[in-house]
Image (cartoon, rainbow, N blue to C red; front, side):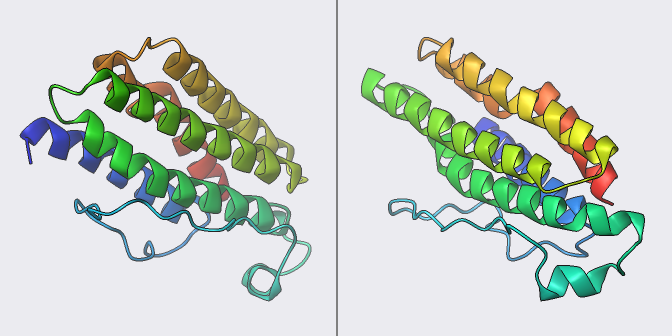
Length: 184
């Protein structure tokens, strides 16, 4: 694997995994794929966002504390990030290769659009689950960063460098960090 592919994939995996794990105070992330990506077709995981407080989130934060307003939203945004990580890892690997055909770039563009659209939906759903105005504002900013990523993918004209830049967007990272801090 070429060094720039390792860097790009490592950045994507580390950023999304760590941000997702830290978002709601989760001590260690669930099994992370590291720098290995399955050779076969990617499988799609079912929705992981919670639509209401479950037994684990209800017992994690006592009722009436400020955190009780954020737990379902933090769980939902963590699920959206994990799904995005699973979808973005193979695309990042593909974009790290040189000499991609027009078909490969079109597929990468489509896959990025699909991943970011699903992430946008997940973040929007998370924003609906919180009564905390500060977290809601941070989730809205994160949602805007994802929207900007979608626009950037659509405006990339299939250029490999532009598609890689969308995956490693500083605006998206800053919005993720803000949500992580709010959920901590």
